[in-house]
Length: 407
Image (tube, rainbow, N blue to C red; front, top):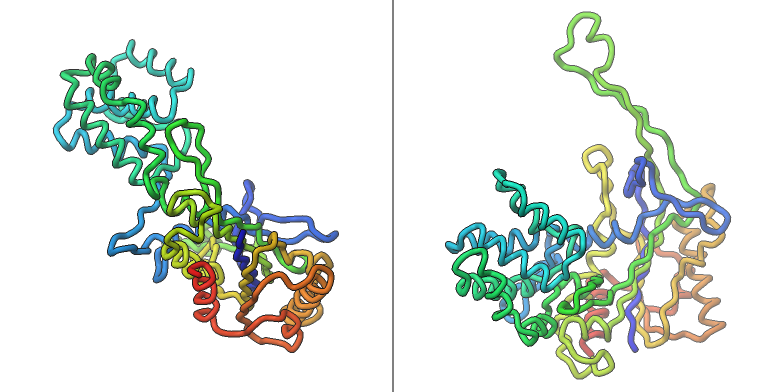
């Protein structure tokens, strides 16, 4: 086994990066103190949807963009039903074909069957209501190759069906067991981001993708720092006495902090997800795509802000510290370096460096140095020498990550 670990320390002032269900900053109790937190879901979404230079969704292999997954309840409507209609298939036939494809690929729940039965007894005048039946009950993660394959099957069914009543018979003729099993053999069928961050499926005909990239919740290395921000909005058209007051008064929470972040890449699983085959034979596979993925991730993780309230807080920041580790031993977080919260009355960044470096040195003494390391540090201190790694730029660190995967 081979793992790539990426550790970061990133400072954000006056921000509200990730909110809970009532609008407050997410929190985490750790080391006897409450910390401000950024959820792993929030981090992954921002990295996955980042569309700037070096984004995940712009990777090309052989001159072709590697497709991402489609995450929606409307995937079948947009990528199967609508293309069928645009291609001249009658709406009722296209709907029936899409419905049967959904049932065959995803399975049909008792609730869906009941809804379909009730629908048959009602007159539907609204086109949007007609298409409700071809939306899934929850968000599905499907690859564009999978959806394209299902559209091909849908066209074959529609070509054999004279009308809506004959769709069932045509479906049975086209959707053979062999055809459905072909879905599992589609290379990168689930989409690039599903190969990275995983997808759970209950269908027998879709390939499950275990997450090759594991992301921890980021948290402040010190006790939470927050305040209630009182604000008002003025009514520019107010006159007379109305102009003396505000048009709106409210408050929100703002936080600040230095966050520790941790990411692990299971490299054999990543290669297996991308190229197919047994993860134990990952070194025998083409690793160009996997290497490019980790090279880009090494840039994205410390530079893409998981920001909310962009217009009022501008929460853009680059990490003060990034360290990449390559090794074959089981990964281990460095979060426990901050089990004792960094004191806020000291230089927080310098103290965080000291605690992190001391913890790494202690772990190395106890268990042996198991990884090869590269790091980037702003306002570097002598204590970082204890890390036992080479210091350089982010480009150099990213190239190191890619070279380790490429072999």
